[in-house]
Length: 342
Image (cartoon, rainbow, N blue to C red; front, top):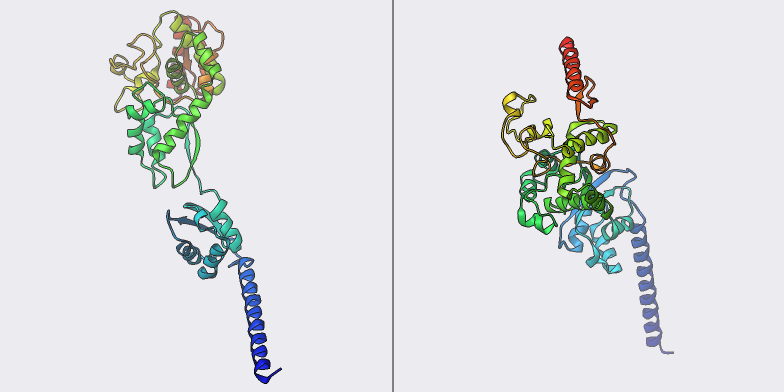
């Protein structure tokens, strides 16, 4: 073999060795990067991945938040795995002791951060709006507009002018990518999950429509904070309706007042508005709040009683009566007891 050939072989051997060494070193560097967390501290980081962001931009966002030590290496990892199109937009929760491969898994498979909104039983849509506004990207006014948008309401399957009563009380979890419309749809969906074919059949047995059930349930919901009383209160109102008596429910007076200050006056009792059951006969035209499952169940399955009246005790439970005379005596008793405490 000539000296030239030997030199060429030596150069080739050096090149192959150098290439293998570089590949080995590169592989070691990448593996070390993939399996090394940027910090030992378990610190939370909430990061918003913009829609349409490039893999390199995402990598730099992660580096800025201390979630990866080298944006370029993370970018190469994404390119090597060919997963850039699968990176999800949204708000995600990370921790600084996560390894890059775990960070990438969140970007590809993780769920967005969810924030809770709790709507108690008996809230009106106007009381729900401020709760909606507690999340900075949601707006209570936009929420109210949707709740009164006839076209939107029809699209949800209701033949009403308002969603009052049909936004099911519960705790909801929403992401930053969800708006007021998505929230309303979720609340209505929860109501529809409650209102099964069995509930519809029971309403027909009572001779009531869905709207009548929800309307009566909303009154019952506002009358008592004690779940065990709801079937008894429901029985009073069912009995009064069956006898053609006016419901005379104080919450219906309040619903029609623009500036309720905590007191019901005689002029309020006599005020002629569509919800005042001291004036109108039967049920109001719409619900006055969103009833929970307990009030709806009580409306569909009232206790079997012959009660026609009830009055609040000092502890906010209620005392029930069959006759007006009995009721009047109890009203006097509790009024006297209340005045003595004052």
